[in-house]
Image (cartoon, rainbow, N blue to C red; front, side):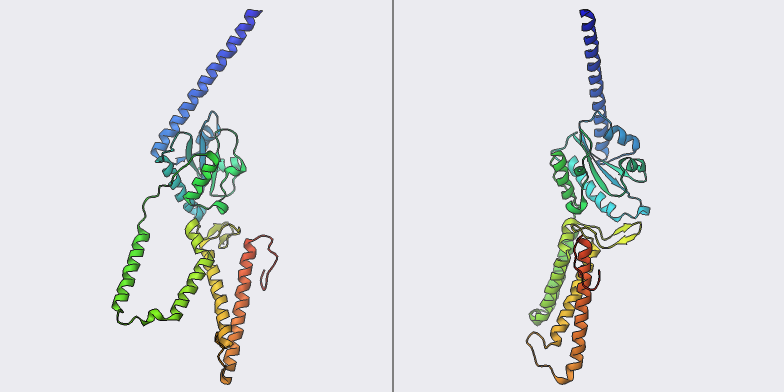
Length: 330
């Protein structure tokens, strides 16, 4: 009886040992295949079979970052191209980073080539970047929130570091377009000042500097600096048509910032018209013959302020859920 028990234990241990060796061999083969594919392309294109073999099926001791997108022009996904460009920067940066290892891989699933994967994960939108951890299933935090974090490579890398504890440094290809444009602008401005060197009285024009200051304020208040930092799309296309106003309070589109700047400008014009109709800032005396014109000017200014401030309030109301106040429009 003892010999039978010992024999059974020996058989079980041998089976588990062989199974562990097979699993280790299978894991080594998968990692080697992924490493070879990454050496050719930093982002691995995934179909249904590759997704099941390398992302979903064990054994697996590595994390997988997968971007789900729809790059075909017929899909009209403008933001997909922007996110893809930043995603490529992240994957290329990791491949040349000192922290590069076989513990993290990057993949991509296009809807036209992997619609079954979208159905498997119940994804009904694009783009989506998900983290598939080495152990366990993805959690809600393993899906990147573009509205809160942004779509720049720096934001994606920070999110990856939070999920995997792997630090990646961004390596962007040099872009000299900004420096060239600035140099050309400087040369043109210097040339203009040189040609007008004997007549520079326009530099003391208060009205010119006031207009420049107002336009600068419009640009900053409308969110142009946020656009430069986060790099949002110009607008978003959906099945129901284009969307110009981002519905979230943590994001915006480029066209939306232009709309806000125009609305603010119209409000300022209305205020200036009312101030000038009342005699200006210094309060000059209004002549009797100018009464009708100034009354008309004040009415136009009041209409501009009321209408365009109401539109501004409507935009804020649309972006801030639960905001109770409105003026002329809802």
